[in-house]
Image (tube, rainbow, N blue to C red):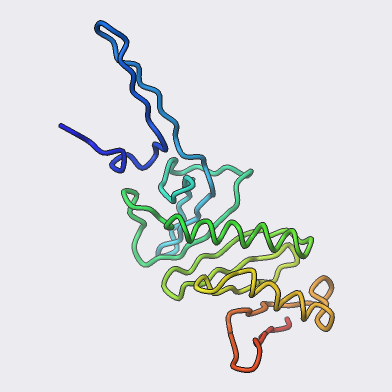
Length: 178
């Protein structure tokens, strides 16, 4: 029975060679580990490691060297499907790296909200940066860069900064102090 590599979401590439007269040599490469997923369903917390295309590669395990992405769902996640599609996962990880580089502040945790299509970056200063996954994170972070002269994100006690809203005459930033 012929199987496609798409049926094996952990395998990035496969190479099969015939070693005459009666051997096959199979070499394969798996997708890299990308993130820890903390899934909360009805107050039950499960942890997974997903690969770079969003499929679970380890259950009930965490790798502290990888970023943490928290997802709250009504039903437990389906381990046979991609938890986060590849483009959204790239967006999430790239927005985290971009924020850390631009603002010299670490992200402790990421909250991914698939239905409203939002990413909330929890900073080491204990406030969230809200991003709209349907708009480029670069544009949203540029808005934040502009306001940093007025709002001291390094010392101000903040709950969140919402960068999702695009206005007709310029972009709006909404924030809440603690």
